[in-house]
Image (cartoon, rainbow, N blue to C red; front, side, top):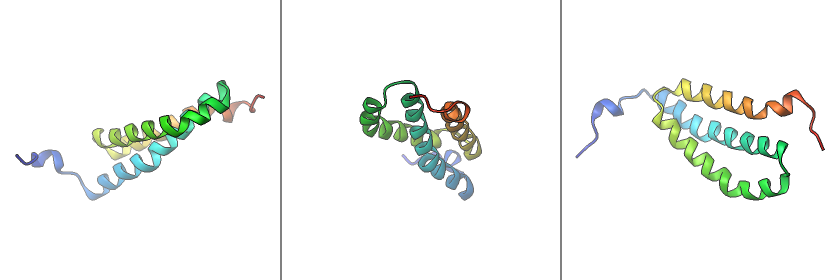
Length: 96
């Protein structure tokens, strides 16, 4: 049974926004999230597990980009999350 056409009707621009948000925005959210963890915890264990958890988080965020209906909303959400996760580096100098 084919998919219902009303659920597939999106403009080319919205499709482009969702794909780029999933690829680029999801990558930035994944990286900045792990940077946030490295700011508060010991870096080597987080850096080592980031190879697996970073990919999983990016894949989940990529799928979420298509679940959310509007490409602009997902881009705003991913930019907001990236800035929020990077905020400790912007506010205070890196502690050692």
